[in-house]
Structure formats: C-alpha cells, structure tokens
Amino acid sequence: MKKLNLAIIGQGRSGKDIHGKYYRSDDNQFYNVKYVVDADAFRRKVSEEIYPGCRTFASYQELYALEDIDLVVNATYSEMHYAITKDLLLHGLNVLVEKPFARSRYECDELMKIAAEQGVTLAVFQQTFFAPFYQFVYDVMQSGKLGEVKQVNIRYNGLSRRWDWQTLQKKCAGSTYNTGPHPIGMGLGFLDFDKNTRVVYSKLDTALTSGDADDYAKILLAAPGKPLVDIEISAMDAYSGYTLKLQGTKGTLKATPKAYEITYLRDGDNPPRPVIETFLKDDDGNPIYCSEKLVKQVEGDKFNGSAFDIGTATLYKQLYYKITEQIPMTVTAEMAADVISVIETVHAQNPLPLKY
Image (cartoon, rainbow, N blue to C red; front, side, top):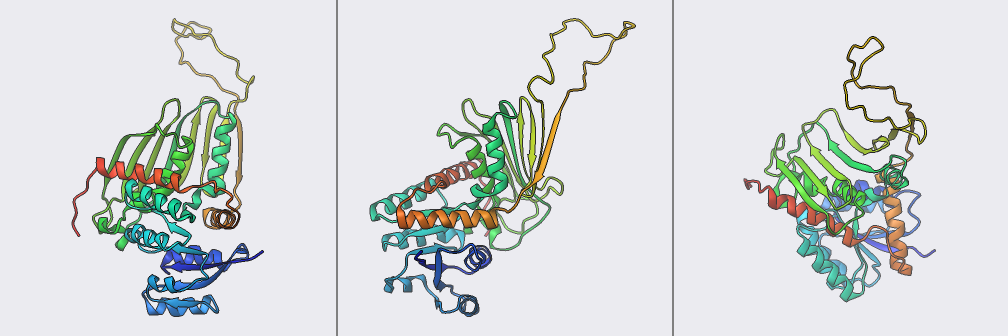
C-alpha cells in the first residue's frame, strides 16, 4: 500500500496531540508526514523531532512550490479555516479541515463548490461520528429496541472555565463553534440529517469564560416525525458530564463515551392494562395511587475506544480511500455544513455583545 504524503498546517493541541497522535500510532498505515507548517519556531523544531525527515515551514504558502503533496490538513485557528482551505483548494490540493468547517453556511457552500470545480477532495474532521458510543446509540435507536424514540438528550457539560483564544467571538470560538460540532453533529445524525430540521429553541450565554463568546448553549432541534433533540453545552454543570440519552416508548438508554446502560420493557412481559375511569381502590375500598411494578430488562457494558482513537483512525482510513479510489466517505462535507447551519442560526437567534 502506497502511503500518501501529508502536510499539516498548525501544531497546536489539535494538530499535535490529536492528528499527530494518530500519525505516530500503529493505526496510521496510510500517511507519511512530510511537511509541517507552523509560525512558531519552537513548534517547528519539535515537529522535526517527532516526524523524522519532515520539512517545516513558517508559512503555508511555501507548500505551493512543492509537487508531491497528496493531502493538506488545516489545523489552524478556527477563524482561519475558511480562508486557508479556500486557498489550498484553489491551488488544487486535497484538504482535511478541522472543525468548525467555517463560520457560515455560505462559506461552507463556497468551499464545497470550489472543491467540486477543482476535482479535489474536501473533508471535515468530524470524527465523533465514528466514536463507538455514538454508533452504538444510533444503532439501538434504529433497532426499535426502545420502541419509538420520542426524545434524545445530548449533554457536553462540565464545571470549567477558559481564558484562551477559544473564548473570543472574533476567533470564531465559544462553545457552539468549538465543542458544538460534536453534539450538534450527533443530534443531526439522530434526525438522519433531515432537511426539514429546524432550531425550535436556542439560548446562548456566558458564565465562567473570561472572553465574550458563549460557554453555555441550549439547543432544541426538531423535524417532522422525528424525536425532539435536546442539546446542552455548559461550563457550569458539575454533574452530567458527556452523556447521550434516548427516551423511547419501551424504555431508556443512557451512554457516556465509556459505557452504557439500557432499561427497557420487553414485548409480552407487561400486557396492556385497560383504562379505569373511576378512582382506584384497594380490597377494603380505600383510594390508592395508580402504580405497578413493571417487568424491566437491564443491560449494560463498556465501550472499547473513543472518538480520539477509533474515530480518528476510521476517518483517516476513509479519507485515504476517498483520495486513492474515490470511495465515498460516510461523513461528508455536506453533513459538516449542516452543522454550521445550526450554529449560525443559534448565533443569529442569540447575538452576544462583542467585547474584544
């Protein structure tokens, strides 16, 4: 198998510790890190040490003089994603861009149009779609085990604060742009990316952040004939963590990235009860509360792997075969653009004051 020559722009936490971790792992049978771009001299020096034989540059434009690049990974600051990706595409390069895809749906559509015109591959790093916990929950939902799922709850919460660039609106940052592509993407996935999906309620706010971007978001998504999706991203919730929950007519599933538990009613275990229009009473005629002990089934287990190992490896593998054999990826740029549509709508509904 011929490895593809890869250039990565940006050696921050994502570029070095997420993408880079994959490049240096045994899972990477597909890519050779040949070029690294970063404006910081120290980061370039570190890159030359961890990717022996690679060449480093201070500016991504220096890549245009090279003719052996098969893929460029854009892991720059969020507000730079659109402009740099556009430039790379116009130079005929295949691009994998970090989330968020761009700031607006217009920008996403323009990038997809350019990629099509240039005949190159454009992908977005939304690896959570390949996370074992998301795929398992989605499969359970489709199986009918919980009956008709009426509501999906997604929580990406914690008690924490930030004071870096990810707290500034001018940097295309805040919870919805930074963290949001994961839960919002999953939410749209549970709705099968129905084009009739609407943001029926949203609220953005600031709580513990030092900047002017949101660190609290509540988003309700709905589509005809589909469950209500309740998404919450909060920096002030110390108890719920990262969870997915399905509420169906036969029971409930709760999952974290590490484990799950299902409590459900098995067909035939709880025969239907006729409605009694008068008050309920015990054998002595005294009124009693309407209750019963349902026969419940409980299952649970742990997940092997996460979005950061299995998810990343799967996305990069699919991208390899998209570039080399034109096999379609299951997570498309169009899906990532739908995520940005939701984020853009939520920000339009909840304008926050600019302070920086």
